[in-house]
Image (tube, rainbow, N blue to C red; front, top):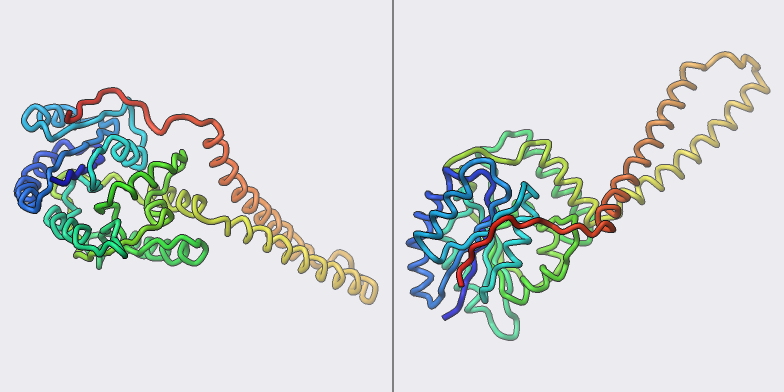
Length: 317
């Protein structure tokens, strides 16, 4: 039988986990009928509620439910990376515990991988939302802007509405794990490693329990991580802006010099001069800030700290 490992990052999902497990039971039976054995790798990302207790109970109840627990909150990216490291299946799925990722899509995802032709194999079946129903309009607007922006400035295509929910072959998972960078942006990494991906679409679903952990601020910072991880365009924009402003400043200097020679009146125009000085200062600070973002990422990579620290582990033998 084929072996599927399902990686489930969890952060304060005490209420959602029992509902997720019950929803997965009929799906597991369907997968078994398709010739696939399944185990879970739940990753407790330093939750502050009873998530770890629920995972211990699930493991006692069902040996297929293995888990690893972090010593503190390291973030979803670290949780997914840890889950992929501990997943031993021929196929590996990544999905959330809040049931926004429909479990009933897994059998179709497996069928697509199994039936793909040997001369043109599909190594990943990903999912994308066709709408953003239930999200605040301002959040949806900026999300769409982010996808348009990053696909313009990056050579790595990131599909609008793509979820982390996907089923991958072992060779694709191994390729992802070979990228051990500290600053991770998985949506970009999934695309960067290549391999043929088939997309399945579905209508957005609400969480079954609990609250979202992604505030607007966290999403904004995450989008900056994605841009700096897969594009150097901001550095080029800062450089070109500097050259353009230097050219404009030189022309303005000639204009001021010629006007002073012809008309005199050196005092006039100080308000516009102040505006120019403030503008140039702002552009300089923006350029330094962009450079600082890349330098900070380099600093974190050079320190070579681990992605996460394990506190407890109990996996299926």
